Length: 214
Ligand SMILES: Cc1cc2nc3c(=O)[nH]c(=O)nc-3n(C[C@H](O)[C@H](O)[C@H](O)COP(=O)(O)O)c2cc1C
Image: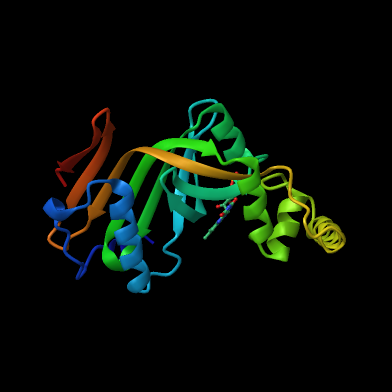
């Protein structure tokens, strides 16, 4: 396996240019530009990101989630808050998000605080989901130990019937979180290994823009 892993190429390019001096004043604007470029470049699931949290013993945890929106409040994601990530955020709202767009050699790292969106917004987000996704969320046992596939199928069927009877029903634990950033780093890989990095750091006066060594 070692030989196979070590023979794999990484960051071979070619990649788009990144003009640090011309970069936007704020990280949300630059993120929007990069996400649009990832979509236009045909990156698969460019809205998939890694959410990192910390548990109550200080150990990190991480998983992939889907970005639902980006606005002046930050980066949004939706999940049930009864499972590990919800409990971890309730105890410690400091989180990190990581995007990697391989065909462009680009990484974005966001550090911030996860805040819950208002109830009405959570309900709207839930109702926009497919019936299958709503049924699974209504079961609400994400990350618990599964005794059997049959138990899962029965639980989902029961919730699918509830949705038919009460189409407006929402899962009580459904949450929409917004990550309000205090630091965002844009990383542009380069085949010559002189990678370009630009960090935005929130200060009283606004966003500081700090180029970093590769
Ligand atoms: C591409 C992809 C997208 C995912 N999107 C979500 C999502 O939007 N919300 C979610 O709760 N879990 C999503 N998951 C599942 C999570 O990675 C994770 O398994 C689940 O949320 C349980 O996490 P936890 O045990 O840390 O709470 C996704 C997984 C993948 C691979």
